[in-house]
Length: 558
Image 1 (tube, rainbow, N blue to C red):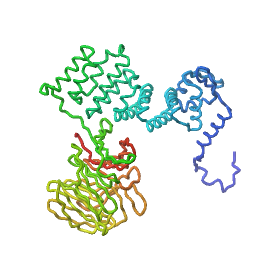
Image 2: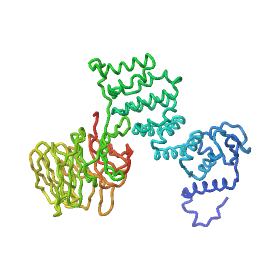
Image 3: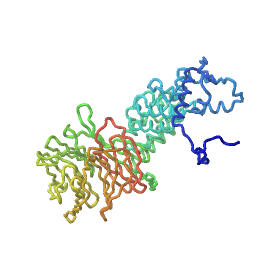
Image 4: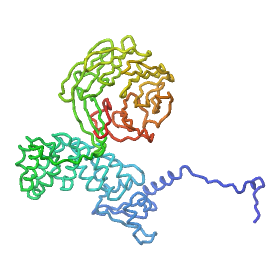
């Protein structure tokens, strides 16, 4: 058949394109939503609850969101022209209707009153997006009053991630949660799993003691049916962390049969005869431990939390809670040799105090007017302090803990209040982008080396150093908070750009160990892998309130 098209359209007849409708998915979704509202073209009736309340819907939508409906409808042999009918007695209409609407409209209201029923129903129907949404809501609202209820629900519906996060919360707050009556209502399996987590997290006497007393309370709640479980449950207690006095005081309440009696006797022998203790396996599993200092304002007083994070157990634990000498805002903290040093700036007066973490004894190192503390760092037995003077100059002073003396160091350039101080095992580094200078101080030779760098208006950046490189992270550049990360090679004075921070950030500190850099914004800890040039947010801080966070150390096999 001859073409009647004008000759000008006969050129390039072999050229083809694919036209894409940008609003295709939104139009289809909108049309299905309207069909649902108007009950048009519905091909399935879902009967909810025991009373069989009917909810009209479309099979294609239910199958797209729910594996349960997909399995049910794929297994049926009915003709596609027939109206399907599925009864779900396990879910009431008041819960099922909002879930079906979620499949059409993509949103659902979550509250303390509804989230438990919605999570149960979503687990039953196998709706992954809704399960994740409900779990996220629960994780953000866990507290000591509801954590056991959520733990039971996570166990019942096999939600491993939610269960792990709840167990972490319970372990960190077990001294309070262990006194709840709801603990005694856990099943045998749930209670055993909880004790296992507590045992793994036990680093202090009080946590092991609370686990012991929780076993007693759980047994007494249903003594006839639970008493035979005493030896099995006691084996979950970290008895090495129980004191001899505690065991002697409480031994009678658990010695209810020969097995538990023999177990408690072995505990006593372990404490009374150290020479008889069996040799432990010296092969250690690799543990990474992060230590931070967090200062928080609680009502009318200020406290410090010394916290550690175990990367294997994925648990935070509070090592110490301390109150400083002053109640004013803490500007800088540093931890070394079991001593916490805290600096407070009040106008142009500073207070530098020391808290011994073993004795909790507080002492004043220095209180002086006309200068404030900008930064602190440790270097070979010296406390290095960067001061900002009333004369708008910057000075560096070193404090010797052995001699208890201060020594003023002449700086190789005139830094501003925006300079940064960092140390490694041998050197002190003073960096100021606003004047384009980097000073390197060798404490053994007592001499400086000055290097010129590119001058730019970068301030409030994070700074970390190892033997070869200086890492500059984020900061504020000409009124813009940035996420860029730069690396300065100390041997050839060259610069390179690394992977950006997970988010733009300023006024934070960083710590480096082996091939990792860690930073914190007050709520999350981010880890940078130097070998892979990648960032990962690996832990959230379960904090009372947002406060200043100082990352202190990152230890391997502590």
